[in-house]
Image (tube, rainbow over all chains, first blue to last red; front, side, top):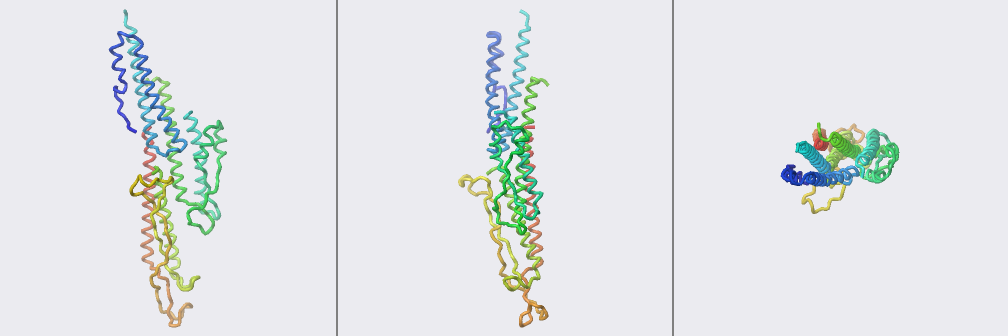
Length: 98
Length: 119
Length: 143
């Protein structure tokens, strides 16, 4: 199992959003969020499976389980921060007086 | 599958296992004492789908006498192999620590979620 | 090889060294024993160690060219060294010429052997402690 470095490239849609927001409005924010949530969900499911294997002693391999859990944690935190930034960017835009 | 619940059940069984092992170690010099063991995989399979409370789980474990397998018999009928028990104790301890750490990590992630990531 | 097999290897070492100590203790206790059940003086005993597979699960051979193994006591054998002949006609076990056969146990050899067994035992305990620390440190990954 590789521990990938998490850069913004993991969430390629984020870069696109900044350009598209004036044209399409709210839709791209939702798409970006949904996409990143789905990816994080898959990583979390993997971590859950590792934890289950650990608890039932199907695999005594602690190292893999710890790596999977930390990977899920980091990607989850990253997603939260991106979500916060997106929402505050959205709110700022909505505050613009027309 | 509820991870926190599963971890809780596994911790309960590991605590019972610990009692069995430390009982063996305490009786390492008792004449006629037969070493006892518990099948962890069997116990966790038993409780994985049940909704039993913690005390039911930890008291319902099956403890059997281990078969003699070493050929190192003792003059007084004691069958405790202290080295094996130390290995089992270490393994149980490490796994217990791991499960506690994993559960703590889960909780801290939930707290992070609740606070919306703003510290 | 499971992650806890390291502990099983060390514990096999502990068991083997403990058996060795038992044999040494028997040799030293009987260092002046001139009469045994089989007749004749006590014969010094030696342990023979053999490497053995200690894994919990059956490993399917081909993965590792050289399997990493623990140790076990293969047998306890009696030494063929000659007995010590001591001239003592007043001893109850003296033969017609007045010689008594004493065990072929050498005190210095046994003491050296005992030190070696103790050091080996300590080394195995060190391995177990270090391994346990390593495993617990792995948990720091998710602190």
